[in-house]
Image (cartoon, rainbow, N blue to C red; front, top):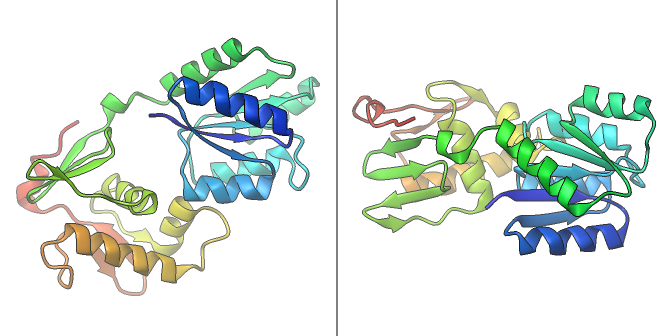
Length: 234
């Protein structure tokens, strides 16, 4: 299910898009301010963002810049500003497309489908073996002996970032920004807590982890075991 974040300060637009997208099997989260949008994106990392430029607290371009600091999710700007200067500024900041209000829902849906196609399909994502575990990045599942291991959205996002960078040291700042978003770079307690939770769920011996390794004073890395490397599937 594609997760969409809709950001607009007009309640009727939020309501209309939430209804229309949910009917079409999208997972929808909404925000009415830029600050709320960045917080929501950190909590529920979106697959696609629909963003109004005219927000009450932050300009939409600032929101785009904040999102682009840590996510590659497509951003479709939805705005009443028809001036080409605004469009260029939004696109230069990292937006993928621009739809001018008033808009047709079918046109917006077509733009959304095109944006998601450009970022790659879930089938491109790998399955990764961790001992007797299989992590299916496309289906967002962790499976042991045919049974699902339940992860919270934040635990999943943290695990996914680590697994996508095998062997690479990721600093605490990088992980906090990637998983929680801008403004959380000092929340090291969050990172320690969620790493501990992941190890309890996934590691055979959480006190002596095989895969989710701490580099003291620096950060964390996912270290594939030699016997698991051949089990990575594209």
